[in-house]
Structure formats: C-alpha cells, structure tokens
Length: 418
Ligand code: NAD
Image (tube, rainbow, N blue to C red; front, side, top):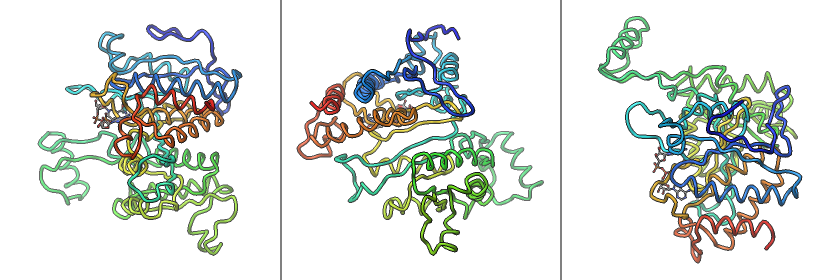
C-alpha cells in the first residue's frame, strides 16, 4: 500500500505467510520504531551490530532492509501531534516483523500507553521474555547461570482488560447492586472500587499453545503453567485446567503431564517428551531463586507474568539487558523492555543490551540462528574484556566504562575476530 510519511526501501521483500508458516526472504524488509529518549542511541548502536552479524554469518547472501515507521514523539512531530499514526499499524499488518525502542507515554488526560495500544490493536497476545544470564554480567545471585527460562505472558486479558468501575460513580453503584442483589456476592465493603478479571478459554489456550509450540521448536524440556488457582478458581484455576486440556488434545505426542510422569514412569521423563507442569504463582518466585533449573518455558496470566518477568530480569542483570517481544498469530514486535530513561537522552551512555537482545530474538524468529549466536558470543567476550556501559561499570570491579557507540564497536570487532 501507499504510505504518507513512511518510505518503503528500494530493495528487499516482504515476509509472508503460507498455510500458517512464515516465509522469510533472504532480503526481508524489517520495521523499526526508533523510540523516544535513549531510543536513538540504542537503536543506532544495535542496528550496526545486527547488520554486522548478518553480514558476517551469511557473507552478503542475506541482508536486512530496514524500514522506519513512527510512534511516540517522533511520530507526533511528523503527523501533526499524532503519537500513534494509523499507517504504523498498517505497516505492521503488511510487513509482519519489526522492533521498537522505548516510547514515552504522554502524561495527562486521554492518553493510553502507546505500548499497550500497539499490543491491543495488533492483537499481539503473547508477551515473550527470555531470561538467561550472560557470562560476566553482574547479578545478585550466587549461581545466575542456573536461570534460563522463557516467559510467555498473556497480553490481552486479566485485570489488564481495563474493565474497572471507580468508587463513588453511578456505574460502580449499579454493578455493586447487581452483585449483591442478583448474584448473592456480598463479600465486599461499601464503595469498593470494582474490577473484572476476564480469563477465557480462547485467550488462555492461544497463549499456552504458543508456549508449547515454542518449547517444541526450541527443544526445551518443560512448560510450567503459573497461576493462582488455589484462590481464584474460575479464572486462574481455569487457566491451569485449560492448559492441561490443550496439551493433551493438541500435543499428545510431544508432551506429557507431570502427574503422568509420576504415576506411569516412576518420576523419569520419557525421552523426547516435554513435561507440562504447574506451580502456584507465589511459590514460583521462591523457586526461581532457590531451584531455577526446574523450570524452562513458563506460561502465565497477564498480572502474574508482569511481576514475574521483571523480578526474574533483576536476577540476571536488570532492565538494561532484559529483551522482549509481543507476538500474535503473524505479527511480531520485538522491543526494549525498559523505558526512555529521559535524563540520558543523546548522551551516548546507556546500555543497548535490552534492545540488542530483542533483536537477537528477532533474528531467531526469522530462523537466522547463526547471526544471533555471533552476537551473543561477541557480547559475552566484550563483557569478559570488561568494557561495559555505565550501569554495569558501577557494579563491576576493574571495568572500563565506555559510551554506547563504543560498546557496539567493540562487539562488532569481537564478532569479526579483531
Ligand atoms: P525507565 O526504564 O526509563 O528508567 C528506569 C531506570 O532504569 C532509570 O534509572 C534509568 O536511567 C535506567 N535505565 C533504563 N534503561 C536503561 C538502559 N538501557 N541502560 C541503563 N540504564 C537504563 O523507566 P521510567 O523512568 O519509569 O520511565 C521513563 C519513561 O519511559 C516514561 O515516559 C514511561 O512511560 C516510559 N516507559 C516506556 C516503556 C516502553 O516503551 N516499553 C517501558 C517503561 C517505561
């Protein structure tokens, strides 16, 4: 389609889908949203690294054609104050895969979070957060290398659906009356703010399906359903129940439930099977500190996933390095998980790690694993040489603090064996 402010690159092809399978050309057009605040610094540095890795891995046979699309402050400047222009959504529908820097959510009346809007409008129902430790990265744990999980957080339902009724409003009074008089639900104080927590079989199953499929594709060993079903039986408990049902119905060959492992296989997982197990959410936080090796892929509801992904990120290096993606049936949007850190704007200081590794996830999503692996090992080598940005430098002994751009240059040099 024709775009107004977006320039389609002269070379490159669209990613497409045939019978549900993604078709990636050797020269795909990938979208990027630069992001506000530190967005320019981390996007510029990361694109240099992604492009260098693709060049190194495939020697010119493969190449990314970047296409800039707009959201946030840069969009507002170009589109007469519109922070989330319609043609950005159109571009994602047409080109399918892209990456974004952090976006400012304008404070004040009427603005919804741009990130939430992108997820909802494009129906990106899985929030995917891999959490693993990279050699040398400062961590508060004694054995951070034991953490290697991928969290699939449901992105569209739960208390995040925004169905809330403020205390003191006529809508709140009407709902309270209905609950008390018609539903015999009386166990709440007068004037309580009220919120609804929708959890559906459709929403739960598509998220859990994506998590199990990921475990199969990436040869992971287990999928843990994390829930509060002991207390919230018909929402969180149902999520767990639907998860086991889905595994048995749609993946009977690939998966086995933990109950079946215990009952029929003496606690030994049969070769080649992915274990589907479940854990109460609060216990999961303990387990990820005490026995993290017992978990691999995690599938969970929206609120649990929100807490869990940030808590686990802190165990292996914090927001400066945690990558993420929001993925739907066809569209995938990879993103830095931190904010715009406005006080560091254009200072060439911050850590590009979160965006950089979101791009590594994007390369893996395209099945370009060789390029992804080059970045990971060059990154670890650079940390090992103790060249780091300010945030890591203050947590490490004998580290040399370098600007974002120089950090990128050193990664590229390590990748090229300099
Ligand atoms: P923030 O993530 O911007 O900053 C939190 C802390 O982390 C700050 O001390 C910051 O300096 C540091 N930090 C963040 N990224 C870093 C990096 N790459 N390297 C080193 N240090 C880094 O969160 P905030 O201050 O709460 O929010 C600032 C703005 O970002 C707000 O407008 C908020 O709405 C927005 N935000 C956007 C996203 C997103 O786009 N996904 C996420 C969170 C916040």
